[in-house]
Every structure is written in C-alpha cells, then in structure tokens.
Image 1: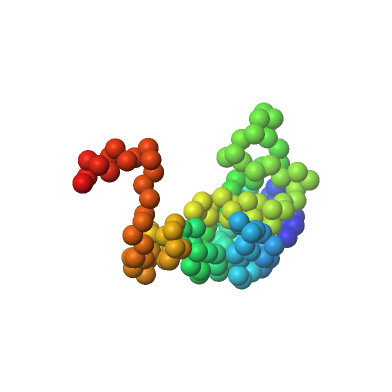
Image 2: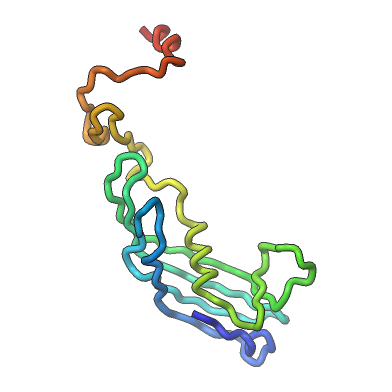
Length: 165
C-alpha cells in the first residue's frame, strides 16, 4: 500500500489512519512459506512539526516446522511498530531513527515487511527445552528415549566421558 503523506507533511491534516491486509505468503524461511494468513495492518500517521510519527499494529498466523524436531509450530503474532518519518535526512548518513520518505509517499508494505521479518525469532522451537531428534535413529526425543544404545561420543570429548565413568 502506498501512503500519500503530502497533507501530513504540509500540516494540512493532523493525522490519517490506515487499515488493510498484506499478503506475505510468498516469503520463504528455509524452504517453507510460513505466513498462513494475510497480515492484518492498522495504524495512524500523525503530523509533528515538519515530520510525522507512524504507529502500526500487525497481526498474523505463522506456521513453521521446529528447527530441532521438525514438529509443526502454529503461532499467532501481534507486533506494534513506531517510526518517525521525515522528508529528507539532513546529513546523508543512514540514520535508523528516521525513515526518509521521498516524494512524500511511503511504501507501507515494504517498511512493515522488513519490520515483521526483523521481529521474528531467528530460531523456531516448539518449546524451549525441545530435545530434537536422535542422530542415530531419528526418533523425536520429546516423546521419550529412543532406545539406541550406541550413542557415539565425539572423539575430542572421550577424555571427559572417561572422567564421568
């Protein structure tokens, strides 16, 4: 969605609201497309002395396999984002406190897509203490021990294992 901010920057209008659905179904994580619902977006942009403040709330359903045991994880996420929007940055260095809005039009989809992807965890686990899969037989160790008796020890750690026995 392209948001026209001419009236906000010129202070003809004090604020404007937006609400829409954003499709992120084509975004991939490790070969999986986890966005199982459209992203519901709503927010406001408020004029502030030549700049603008944007507040946005997003919510969506997310479905992805656990990084350790491969069980499917279904979660619902709600995130809130805040940005200060300016027409131009005075010093041309990248300043991540402000979002430069060229031509007084903001591509909300691109900005919120980046916000969402940065907010998501880097590792997806079904639970904090997920034990993963047995490297020998592949059984999900969250369901109990696998019964494999020949768990091999890393040769570099054999000395430490001898201390335990």
